[in-house]
Each structure stands twice: as C-alpha cells, then as structure tokens.
Image (cartoon, rainbow over all chains, first blue to last red):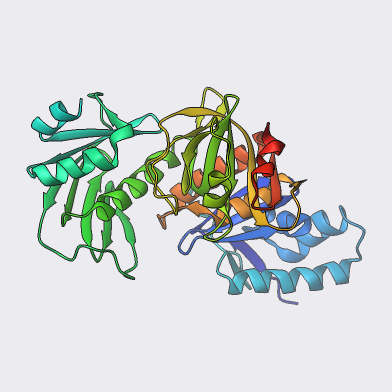
Length: 99
Length: 269
C-alpha cells in the first residue's frame, strides 16, 4: 500500500492559539483555523513521517477513534489542505526544508 | 513648531511613538501635511524613515486601483494609481512621488507604519478606539459595523483616539492603544494620546447592549479579518501572527452587541 507524506508549505506562518492552530497563507493573507486533531497533523507534517504512522502514533493514541476511520479522515483533511496550498502532499518522502 | 518645520522643508509626523519625516520642496504640500497631521507633528530628530517627496502633476484622487506592496530584499515598493513610493528598510530612506493631495501620503503612512509595527509587537487594526479612565478600549469592525457610530455616542470626557484605524503596540509588556490621524466617517483626527488596552470589542449593532466574551482563538480569527496587513512575505506574516496570538492571549476580547444610543458607554464607565 502506498504511503502518503505531508509537509507544511513554505509560504505559511502558523501559531498555536488555545486549542487551535492558525495558519496564515502569506501570499493572499488567507487564514486557516485548524482544530485539535488537524493541529496534530500540522505539527507532525515533516515530509518524512508516513501519514499512517502519524495517525497511529498521535491521533489514534490520543483521541478516541479507530485506526481506519482516523486514517480516512486524515486523508480527506490533508487533501483539502493540499488543495488550499498550505500543505504539500506526496506519495514519497519530501526533503526536509532548511531551517 | 509648525512654522519651523515648514521653513526647514521637513516635517516630522510621530504616530505610536514612531517618528517619520517628510521632506519636500513644495510649500503647499508641507502646509497640507501640517494641517492634516497637526496633532501629530514632532520635533524628534531620530526619524525611523525619511520620506523624500516629489510633488508632481499626476492623477490626484485614489480610484479603484489596487494598492500594491512588494518587497525585494530590503527594498519595498508601495504603489497605487495615484502614487508610487519606494522604501529601503535598511537605510530608512524612502521616495514618494505623488500629486498635491492628502490621500496618497496618508496611505503611505499607513503602509509604512504597518510594516514597522510587524517586528515591534504591534499592528494596525480597522477599529475605533477611545480612552476611559486611563484605559484604552478598542472597537473593531469592518466598514458599517459601527466604529464611527460608537465613537460619536461617547460622553464628552472620553478621549477619542481614532474612529477608523487603531494603532496597537506592546510597550513594557503591556499592549497600548495610540491615537492616529487616520479618519473615518467622523472626519476628525484622533487625539495624540496613548493608554494601556483594557479590552478588544468586535462590534455588532443590535436591539440590546450585550457583551459576550470570546476565546483567544475566536478573537484571533476575527482580529485577523480586520487587520491591515500588506505584505505577502512569510517572515513578516509569522511576526504578525505571533503579535496577534500574543495580543489575544493577554487582552480580553468580546463581542459587543450595541444599540446606537449613548447608554452603551455605561458598559465602560
């Protein structure tokens, strides 16, 4: 089965505020608000950890949800964030971006 | 002060404690600045930005042309149909070409201040603000939300900082609201004063006066919608978001539903 890899887009700024993560797409000043589980995915989006591993280790372990449901929801969410341009989604690891 | 500034071909306008100077060889332009920014003229000699103005015959009134703010390295370009400006953030030197009108330089002032504030824990916000008992109250909303209305209802002893653009900056670990010359429907410049901010209120007009507290995340979402943020550049976006997050974590934010009558100010007495 193919893995999915996710990485935060370079043209974003993010900050945790309360239970949410605010993500600013800098090019057009659009603001996205990520809920708690989406925030977990965002924080873990390093480009190299498979999405399934992120879901198993951080979503299933931390929230009352079964593995398949959590993974399906995560795939939907990252696809949406990918369409919005704030997350890069690939079927192979993405190079780590210089800090 | 105004006559000396005029004869030296240089005027210093200080807003939010940040002085910017304008230099021009045009008496009419300098006189116009003196009138428009009378409450905000300064004698400071440590201007953060020196704007060299060339007054030229060009289209005078801003129309629907979009405002463009771009950065290349340290050089910023600020452009609209009625003016063109460049600013080197490293040297502090700026050049502005505009006709004899008050709107172009007013826009340049707003843009440069918003950029200066981004790394000074501050921002400009579409909001009216006023001082009651040495505390500033910020009333934010888009056009039509009631910024000018709520200020026009204020008792005489309330200090009106602005009815259009609020200037917010962290000073010594406290966020303060400053007066600005940027005017809305009241067409009256704010008082040049400052005070620590007591609260941020998002305006809604309704049948009764009511205050509903907001979570920091909800406040941040609303605040970002009303922020003056010009630059499409990641580092600056991060600074602005950091300031907003810090602000909503330290200043109470509420939704204020108000009836457009003077009694609304009893809530802040």
